[in-house]
Length: 337
Ligand SMILES: Cc1ncc(C[n+]2csc(CCOP(=O)(O)OP(=O)(O)O)c2C)c(N)n1
Ligand code: SF4
Ligand SMILES: [Mg+2]
Image (cartoon, rainbow, N blue to C red; front, side, top):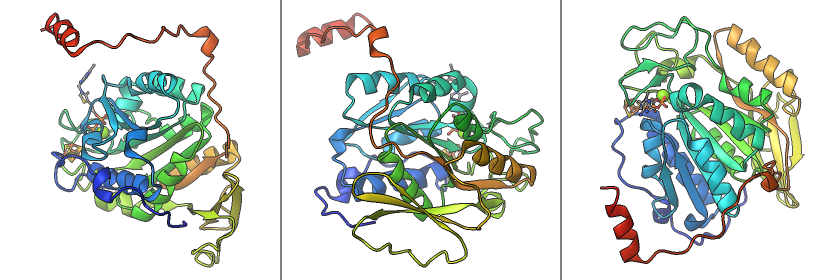
């Protein structure tokens, strides 16, 4: 992708020092997010980071310290995002959630966010366990997955990607926390998308799900992964740096704005058409039946204009709040102590 003249240094995108376990996949994802924002030259004060509860949700503290940030209640980040989007539609929203936060306690909120197509990047840092509360299995754990505590997943797992496609999400992808190149391209494309851009990221929990029987350990995630495609965002007048990289596959070109085109490189010629939701779902199910994990951009419909489907006339919009003085704010807070 074309190098933009940077207005902000990389330091201005950094966050606090991570308190997560060393080697946790979530730490790598924080790095990918901050690097993508720096590459795209987005002003840090034009970004709002939103999350729920969990190690993954804590991670918004470890990037973009100069951006707005709210750590909300468990599973309700989508509701928060809906409110923030209405209050200030000009902010870029980055939501970070966990598999438990999204697929268990917050499943309904997730579905409604997609129905409303709130413009935001929605990342699930998926380790198939509740890391923060010591590794219980979450609803995304693959069939037969066993965590460190030797709990076995016997229930039907929820695949957040097929669910997102079914709910009408027009940007659905999966990647692996250790794949810097793919994560970088997906996040950059997602930050330009006018609607929910959902990325399910396999992010190994080294404390509770990195055992040999785990399907999302560092080793298993790499071994079981089938990557369907790679993407590149290309300026119209520029020749793609990776034009000849994937000689065996097809290249699909999708216009994403007046001057940019998405180049999608299929890694096998018979891989599905990413603009067809039924083909995308069928491809994911086929790979799941092989006990493998599909990654790549699964479904994408370019939307050049904002398409928020929130029916503003049906919502009660309160008049602008009066700004409280510092003293009044302190006295209000003291009432709740
Ligand atoms: C209403 C409510 N129920 C349960 C909890 C306890 N709790 C905190 S985090 C968490 C699960 C987090 O798992 P996940 O979203 O996968 O994040 P991870 O820690 O794995 O990154 C649970 C059950 C809570 N904080 N609030
Ligand atoms: S417990 Fe797991 S998810 Fe939480 S910080 Fe440690 S490795 Fe990451
Ligand atoms: Mg988890």
